[in-house]
Structure formats: C-alpha cells, structure tokens
Length: 68
Image 1 (spheres, one colour):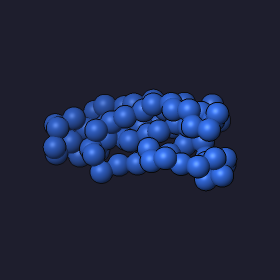
Image 2: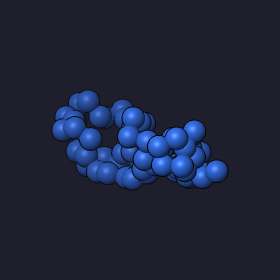
Image 3: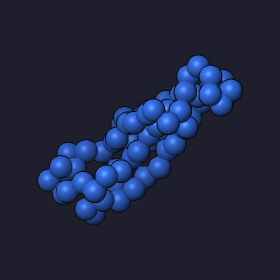
Image 4: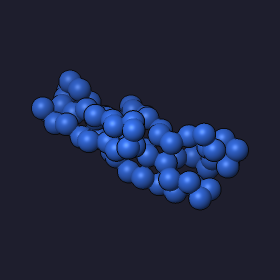
C-alpha cells in the first residue's frame, strides 16, 4: 500500500485491490489504525489454475478465502 497520510485513512477499514490475480488477505497498521487489505485472487483461474474469491464479514471485519 502506498504511503497514505493519516487524514486519508481515518475512515478506511478495508482496502480491496486486484490485478495481480494472487489471493492476499492481510492486516496492516498505518497511522495507529488497523486496515484489512484484500485481493480476492482470480475467479476464473486462468493464470494459476486456482479459482478463488473472498467472503467478507463486514460486522467483524474478517475475510475468508474460498478456493474452488
């Protein structure tokens, strides 16, 4: 994640991104705030022959990977 300033992330809990086709779920701490980073991977599985997605629990800020 780029160098975000405190004023830019004060209302951010989750960052969703893609384009890499690689599933990634991690918590980072920026400006004394935990942020959940999620890349769901690739649903079609064309590049890596692994289809994936992420189920996101918004109440608890939890992400669960699903492979199929």
